[in-house]
Image (cartoon, rainbow, N blue to C red; front, side):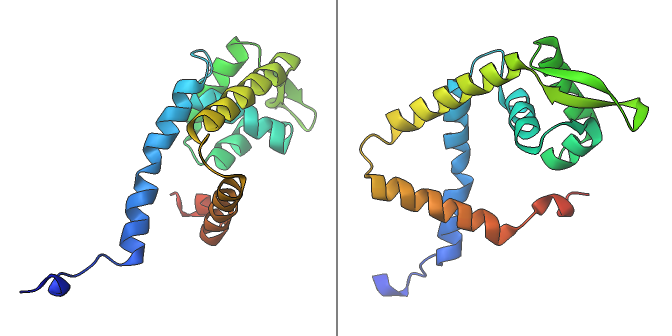
Length: 152
């Protein structure tokens, strides 16, 4: 049997391996975050800033997590003063989540740390390579669409 008879993995198998290995990149970025504001809390802050004030049920949908998981992350951000719970003007039994000035400060710190981590780890990459990776990751995400609808 010669070397040509060995079946090569197809491009999607190779892609699957590389996407699976992204976990190492995510863990590396998580190590750059402040101890008091890890992944879940950081996601709450980023999403409330991006989407604006919202109820916790909506946040759980956007995060694609169970309400109990979302509640724990929100409680953590409230305890640290990064998010405040305000009465919902449309339904006084509900609360609206709003990012506080302290939450904006924490997001600035998170952005700084993540940017520094990328700068450090990708120092030998060209600007064109970083731009290409950014474009291709955005394209990959768009190709999958809104995957939250498939979590049931």
